[in-house]
Structures are given as structure tokens and as C-alpha cells.
Picture 1 (cartoon, rainbow, N blue to C red):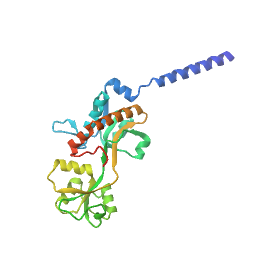
Picture 2 (cartoon, helix red, strand yellow):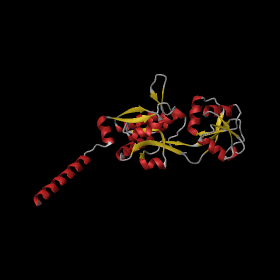
Picture 3 (cartoon, rainbow, N blue to C red):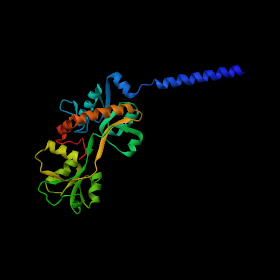
Length: 262
């Protein structure tokens, strides 16, 4: 009986050691990327100017170029999987791609479940008025003023918190047009949306008169446990920043540098 017990114990120990050895031999995401020579990023592909299709149906945009520059620093090819925003993070969980480069805002809730790269986009809230408007200089000056906004947007809540009276619109394009036509005193949005508008309509008579103190930061989203991939991407971003590449890409799409805080 004792011999049987000893043999059983030995077999159990051998099984544990074999299973332990199998766990140690698992390949990390970054090791697989280096082996396969490509990294896959998730994109919406319909979110101009970050990721969209040009007239030749090529995937282009600010986030697309940032991702390609990161991949080049890693010594691999950048590949893209296009998907809708509603399911983009679930796709990362399912292992459909290695990371998400799609203006994912850094939040405490997301940081509990995922890793983030260092931020590479800093977005600020701004007050936009007609160039001829000299009455509004701050968020506080929105008090009692007509502010054109989508009534259900976060920016409408911001304007209302300062006493602004919301003039309902369907989106930024309509909101800015009301400001340009002097049918509204101001609109509120993020500075990047305004820069994109001005880049496409440089003659538009609109200006920013106030900017929020705090920025919303966006970064590459990575699965928990992929610490080596996070470090590699951060190293790549650091090199791209010091070389001026991040600034170059930003100025191409926005006419200004949104890759560092004000």
C-alpha cells in the first residue's frame, strides 16, 4: 500500500512539473509579433481625420500614420483590422488584434482592465466664436449667450454649466455654421475638431477664445499582461517624439501639434 501511495505521489508531482513547464513556454504577444514580423492594430476606418479611406479607398489618417511609425520602430509591418467602435474593445479581449490605435481615451475604469501606452494625443475643450465677436473671452462669458450644440452632447452639459442657452443642432458642422452666420454666439467642442475644420476650411471666420485647463489624453490600448509590448510601444513613441515625427504627423492633419500638452 505504501508503495502504491508513493508511486501515486510521484506521478502527481511529475504532472505538476510538466504543466508548469508548459505554462513557462507560452509565447507573449510581443514575441509573436517579432516572430510573425507584423503587428495588428484595430481601427474604425470611418473616423476622419484619425482613420478613414481616401478617394482611392486607402486607409489613411493621423492614427494610421502613428501606428505605422510605431511598427517601423518595432521593425515589423503594421496591419489593420477595421471594426465598429461599439465592439472594438471586445475584439481586443478576443485576441482579434494586438492593440487598438483609435483615439482611446485614458480613464481610470479602463486602466483597471487594460494597459495603456504613454499618451500621444492631448485634446482640450474650447470656446469658438465668430472672428468679429469681442464679447466672449472665457467659458464664464457663455452665461446668458446662445451656444449652438447637439443638445445631448457632453459639450452641451459643459456650456449649460456656465449658463449658456443651448441652440440645438445635429452636430459640429451645423453648430459652427450658426456661429459663422451670427445665429449663435458661440459653440463648444474639442480643439482637435476645430483644427480639422480650419485645415479644411482655412478661410472660415472663426476663432478659439478660451481653452480648458485639463486635457483628455488618448493612447494605444493593450491587453493586461502584455507588459513587454507596452514597453516596446512606449520606447517607439519616445523615439518618434524626440525625432519630431509625432509633431510632423500632427501638423500634417491638424496644422498644429496635438501630441503634447499645452
